[in-house]
Length: 195
Image 1 (cartoon, rainbow, N blue to C red):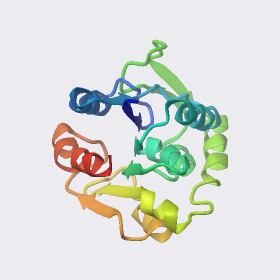
Image 2 (tube, one colour):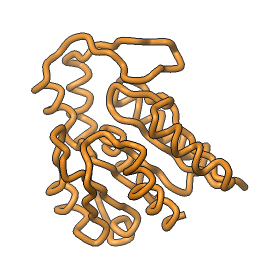
Image 3 (cartoon, rainbow, N blue to C red):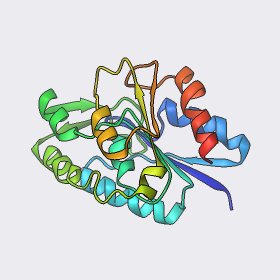
Image 4 (cartoon, rainbow, N blue to C red):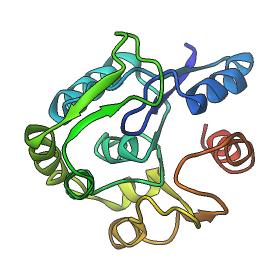
C-alpha cells in the first residue's frame, strides 16, 4: 500500500498552496502521496472532515501549518509535524476583526472570498477547548513542533512546550509562512526521518 502524508493548510489558504505543491513534487517520485484537501471553512466541520479523512486515507504522517497545525494537534495517534501552530485562532481572528477576507490560494469550489463572523470565532473557541487533552507520553513521542524565529503572526511556543515538552521542539530561521528554502532544509528532512 502506498504511503500517504496528509498536509493541512493554514487559514485563508487551500490544498493548492505552494507548500502542498512542493511537498507533492518532492514525495511523489519517491512513491509517497501527499493528500492536501481544501479544509472546510467552519472549524467544527473542518475537524469532523479531517477525522473522517484520516480514517479513510490512513496517512503515516500529518503536517499542519498555522491553523492546520491546530487541527493536526487534535488528530491523535499518528505522527504529526506542527509548523508555526496557531492554537488561538478565536483570539487572533477577534483581534483582526470581522468581515470579508480573500483566499490566498485557489480553492476547488472556486470561492475567492469568505466571511469571518462571530459564529466562526465561536466555533474556533469551542474547538480549541479540545487542544492538548489527555496527552500521554506515547502521544508526546509522535508530535514535532517547528517554530520560525521571525514569526510575527503567532507565537505559540510556550503552549507547545507546556504540553509536549522540549524533546521535539525545533526553531528555524524563518517567518510564519513557509518558503521553498525552509521546506527543503527543515521540513522535508524531518518528514523523511519520520516516515
